[in-house]
Length: 350
Image (cartoon, rainbow, N blue to C red; front, side):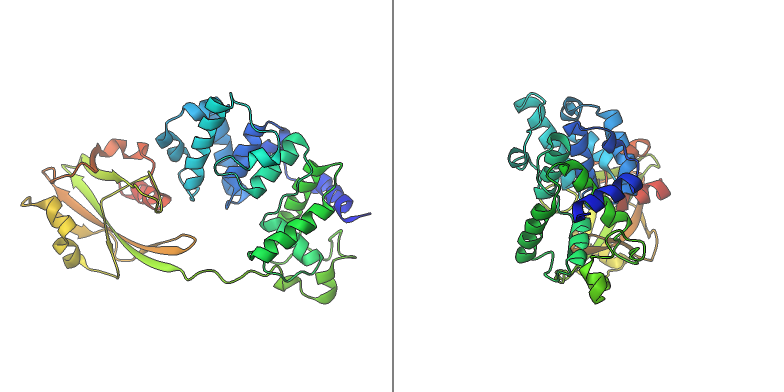
């Protein structure tokens, strides 16, 4: 039995039950693939259920406010996915009359849709013979063929895509693509793969050569940057607080946060009180400021680690606020989309 047939046979016996596997509706497949980018199935599944419940069609998603979409996405991270999701829904609803492109080439033109997602939608929804290549697929192919070309190199991307095209089942591209992804997730796992009971063990080159644990190969990541975030948590008359919306192209675009003083290193309370941003807010008003917790809350992103502290500022008057700041009732703070770092703080503090 050839490679693809063995994978499909294994898949039909071992696949997990997922709601997106019960349909070939391109809206549902697209939604699931965007959610599952950089996200484990166990974490993404509740979000998929929430999105399909609140926005059952692409028109419903297109008509939603971006803030609503970001709020529903809260906790998944990589928020550009949510913004692209919303923008693409509007494009499909308004420019394409709700009809998704029906081929890989045109799907690739959609905002937020890359090679992998376009391949998944094209094969699953339209039975187009285009292979998916994600982390699971890289792992299966690199081990089975004992390939040590770095998967995150230009050469590696081309090499593995070529191999994937050679071995996709042309008669069952949708099933094959789902099979190899599921095989990588459940059988050929990153750590401690089940080689003893693997249906491909008799022909797996890395198993023969003892290189399973060292594959796939990845080039070293860029140096992780440290950033120090000092948030001001205003507690005004025990009723109101202050937030602002992040703008620009940095992290958490269009999400809300508390007033922030970013520093180059660890700082103390004196530094905060003497900072111009703090002085401008306080003017001559009386206040009481305390450090919420001495230990940093460390939030790890792909290329940066955020070392975060929260300073609680209690006062009876509204500070001198710029137009970028919003005074909100504490009881309504949960309605705003915020990064999970701040969402966790809000849940524990207010």
